Every structure is written in C-alpha cells, then in structure tokens.
Image 1 (cartoon, rainbow, N blue to C red):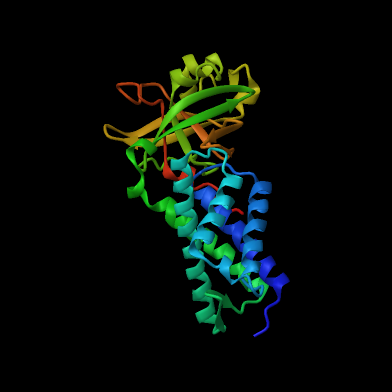
Image 2: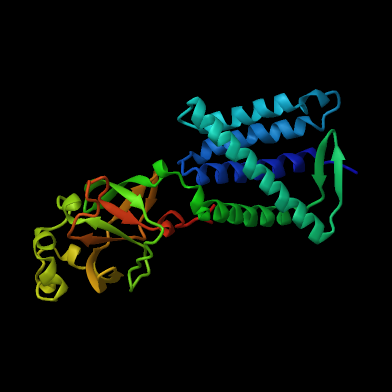
Length: 295
C-alpha cells in the first residue's frame, strides 16, 4: 500500500473542518470559519505525523486528547472548563459518528481498509469522501436536533433579539415543541410574541387596533407602508379557540443563540403568555432546525 502524504493531509483537513463545524453547530455556538480552518490544519498535520518514520510516539492516547483540546480551544471563545469539556465530548461523539459513516461507505463500496501505526486507512476517492462527509454532517445534525427529550429544563429558555426597521427588542422565549405555527403564505415558522414586549418596535396602529386590522378595516390605512407590506394573518387553534387569528409581521431578522434568521414571522398575541411573566414568546423546534444542513 502506498500512502500519499499530501492526500492524507487534504482529506484530514476536510474531515476535521466538517467535524469541527458540526460540533459547534450542534452546540449552537457561532464559530469563526477562519479559526475552524486553522484548527483543521493542526489536526491534519497531526494525522500526517503518524505516517512519518520514527514518529510513532505521536499516536498516543494522551497526545491525541491534547491535540483535540488544542483544536477546540483555537475555535472556542468561552474557554471555561465546563464549556470546553462539553464541546470536547460532542467533538468526540461527532468524530466517532463520522467514522461510522465512513465505514458504512467502505462496506457498501467494498473498499479496502488498512491499519497503520494503530490508525485506520480507508481507500476512498476524495470525491466520495466529500459526499460521505456532507451526508454524515446532515444526518448527525438532524439526529442531535430532534432528540427533544435530551433538552434540559434550563435550556428551553432562549434570548431572542427581534429587528424591525433598525429597532430592536430583546425578549425571553420558551421552546414549545407543540408550536407548529406556520405563515400560510410563505410557510415560515412563527414566533408567538406578547404584544407588550415588542410595542417599541411596531407602529401604534398595530399596537392599539389589532382587532380592526384583523377585520380588514385599517389594513389599507397603516401610515408606515413598509410595515403594511410585512403584515400577514395567521390562523391558529387552541383549547377554547379552534378558529383563532393573529396578526403576523415579518421582521428584518431575529437573532437566537448567536444565529441570524430571516425566514421567520412574528405573531402578535395580545394576552400574557406566562402568568408569572417568565417569558414573552413561544417558538417551535423547527426554528432551531432552520438551515441545518448548510455547510
């Protein structure tokens, strides 16, 4: 078997980038692509060292863990011990999952599998490796984000920033897995927001005359025509109200967990959503799944 060091470096660079990207995406941490690339170079260089004569000592568990920690710390901004350990565990879980996908492709494609210096080499064309990487990323992210029962109570509250015409409102929202509201026209996910929490960023017509707007009386007379174009009516059903209607407004963007989302609609709800006012909005899991397979 002939091993080409440049191919080993390139393929490990790509794999490391995919694993790091997936790791930070799963943890919903915004990471610099440049830092991920630099960290991937470190990992790829370490992989190459395993094939250099008299460098067998690098293939040691302690050194592997040390390199992994360095790779994580290069990308991670919040370097507190607990956060670093959490990211490291997810990093290993994603790495093992990616390895499983690679083995599955090797078995399906009847490719040769070799061991060298306690490492594993799979004879893959680079293009096939890329396809396996993309499929692996999408599958892993899908699985992680759909395991609702792993969501801790402390994790169901999120801080959301809503931007409308250069105005911003910061609110506390709760993840409601039963919230499946969609805008009937664009099919964008809907965040149900208490009216009082966003009254500073919406026109007075929306704040004071929602009932008349729902009836169509004021829709053509809203002074801010840019806002008028954003308005939609969203049907919903709940206990005691099977044919409800709320006004929806498309914001410029929202930011949740350091992720910017534009394909969303704000549903304005006139009553309090929480009796103890612990949160001002409800959103569904599909909002967190937006663009989940983009690399």
